[in-house]
Amino acid sequence: MLPDVSPAALHARLAAGEDIQLVDVREEIEFDYCRIAGSVLIPLSEVPRRAAEIRSVGPVALICHHGVRSAQALGYLQHRLGRENLLNLRGGIDAWSREVDPSVPMY
Image 1 (cartoon, rainbow, N blue to C red):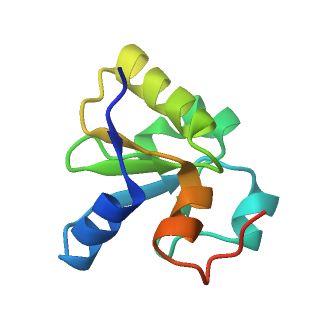
Image 2 (image 1 turned 30 degrees about the vertical axis):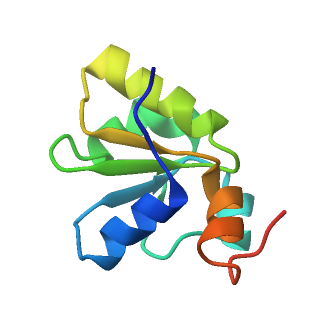
C-alpha cells in the first residue's frame, strides 16, 4: 500500500510550519485553474525526466485531481528510485477543496 495523507492532516502539518514539498502532477491547464499555494508543477508524464526536482530527503506530498495520478507518480518514485519520503494526498485537490479550503475551485 502506498503511503498517503488526508487533506486535514496535510493542512495541519503545513499550518504547524512543517517543511513539506508539494508536487502537483496534474497538467498545466489544471494547475493554472487551481492549486494549493506553494505547489510546484511537475506533470505526471514529466516525473521520470524531472525526478531530481523532487527532493529525496524531507517529506514530499504528491497532488493530483483525485489521487490517482499522484499515486502513480509515488509508485514510480518509490519502486524505481527507492524514494521513501513520499505521501499521496488522499482524494487529491478535489478533497482539499471540499475538506480544507473551499476557496480552491473544484472541477
